[in-house]
Length: 255
Image 1 (tube, rainbow, N blue to C red):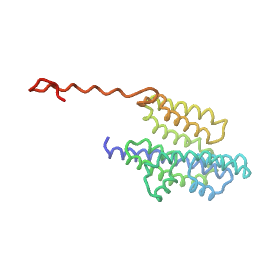
Image 2 (cartoon, rainbow, N blue to C red):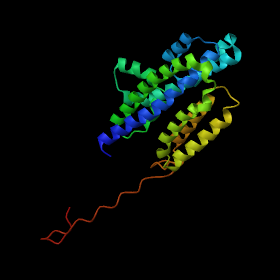
Image 3 (spheres, one colour):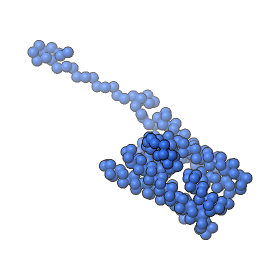
Image 4 (cartoon, one colour):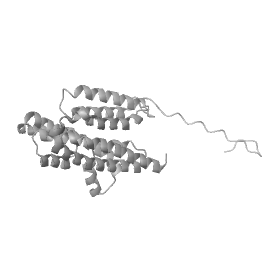
């Protein structure tokens, strides 16, 4: 694939994931106002916090326990947002140096921008995927948050329109082509099943951390990966050098 094709692929993936994710901001806006936040508090939260899962965790706990649940809401959202630290380590080589660039990248380091970037094959495509996805989601998410906060009472439960499945479907589209090796398939199954089982019974954020831990364990141990030198697998020994040809005048082997 040429560089131009890879760039176009990164742009297409960025737009697809960005638009699908941004659409779900309507849901956050509606839920936040239903939980007791006013329009400007809801929009301010999306502008500064800008990490969808943590935002939903925050308003979900507040909706269940009111203002008194504020400390629990903050703790839950912080726990869920801690995954972005791992993302930042992964994205550091892609972003490059410069504190202004890194400051902007820190705000755009989210599930979607990291996923699109990691799915690209070249450094240039990875950079395009990261920045474009992050910007598309940021602009779209804040616009749809505003819309959702305005009309939340009118549209009711936005999951009835399938917006909650749009982002998940986009992620699956990115993930599917990468599940070619046995190790990647095992990570996806174990992490997905474990997170699904824990989600109803543990605090928000823990299932995500578990899924990330599964990937780390598989990567460090190279379980099912077959990396040369790991788990007793070693590269083949080099072939012996051919015997030197005999000297044409003496008939003896050369030095």
